[in-house]
Length: 232
Length: 312
Ligand SMILES: Nc1ncnc2c1ncn2[C@@H]1O[C@H](COP(=O)(O)OP(=O)(O)OP(=O)(O)O)[C@@H](O)[C@H]1O
Ligand SMILES: [Mg+2]
Image (cartoon, rainbow over all chains, first blue to last red; front, side, top):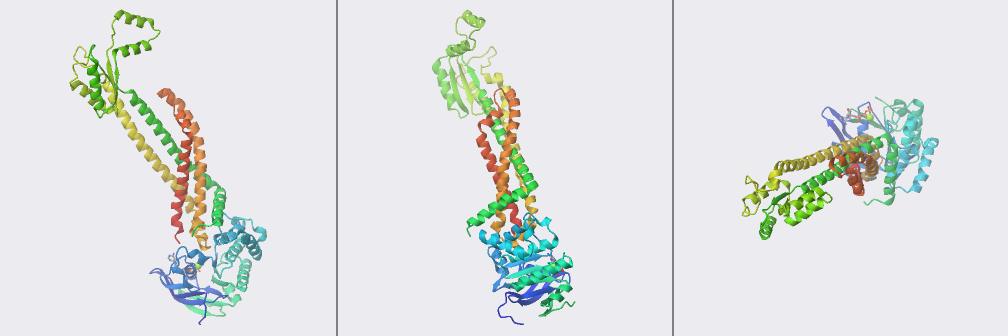
């Protein structure tokens, strides 16, 4: 399938950690703006590796990853923060800053981007409202439940209005009810016009989403379906 | 990219907030930096004090050469000139027999018995002398040899066995011992200071590194959220400055009673020379050194330690 103006383009990407551990092998696909794409696969299939390469946390062994038209891994140390401010990240283990309150965690993303104080005062409560955590703004992460932490993480990921939200098993540590809420939130984010990339191995989620599904198997892209179901 | 005002203000804010929120870790870091600069401070005051004592002891060492009664003054002054030309010699002072007598009278003023005995002798019993100070105490032997071998042997006074009256010969043992003691204590003092300073630096750096190592996950999250390196590093450097400033005040507060206690002991030992006095009269310079050392230690340790966690 050819997408005219892809937001993200994986071009024959391989990641070899060692001869016995080939995380990705010749993976190519594109992601269009406003898409909601799920990356599925068994444990060790290479989902996290794929997202890490997109975030430039690691470099591919071969191949290139493009964000809009620029090669992410060709970016300099000074350029990289600017690219990352256009991506929001959510992890299974939340990765909030433990010394900062919910409000400060969300505000930090904007402060790092050099936003004006007035904008921050306006945007942060709005986003916390969206994830339903207005009343817990001044709680530190250790004073929040897992579901609440993840909602703060989502608020942080979307507050700077990124082009894409990247979520790596965001529901991995949550009970079914919280899982549902987080997925609803991601759908809402997508409805508001943001691309969402979701890595998961939760069959229920995939089957209820009815969106595009990319399946990885031992580092290879084996299936790419527009209204995917979880088949393994 | 030059840092804008808003970023700078946020870095300051997070530096202060992190310092307070890190509670125990901040306190521990301040304590370790304090210990380090405490060592540096005591070494500085201690070695300044030690070298003060050494110089004042060296100042006390001199040798005197006594002349036969009636030795012509122009010959003595010629010898003085020759001595002053020697590279080892720092100063030569001529004391005529009359001056020696006057000094003796001065010293024993009020002591009738002694002054009376002078009257009994009638003539001036003192000989004129040259008082010679060397640049350092190891040179007295050479000077003494020059006096004995030189062409001035004739005017120098001698005792019944022919031994010239040069005080070095009489005090040789004490002077030699003192001279080697002084130079070893200088060397040991320097070595000990160096070792202490290096240990202090290493301990402080390790503590700061450990604290930053504990923040490594946070640092990588900040990078993923799009924070620039300067924005991540900044608050750590601000914290380092705060650590250093507090540590220097704390250390000064520790040094004060420490030197006060030592002051009482040392003035009893060295008669008048008091470390506490030295500390008090130089307290501003000492505080300044502590402040600079503490802030440098805090900031540089943080700067070096954070580098490895800013790799991505
Ligand atoms: N830093 C690393 N060094 C060596 N091998 C690694 C490293 N990171 C991942 N791997 C290997 O790469 C492969 C893919 O790992 P990855 O984390 O991408 O899987 P995943 O699909 O996210 O699995 P899970 O669902 O369990 O999170 C695995 O075989 C893993 O052992
Ligand atoms: Mg994973």
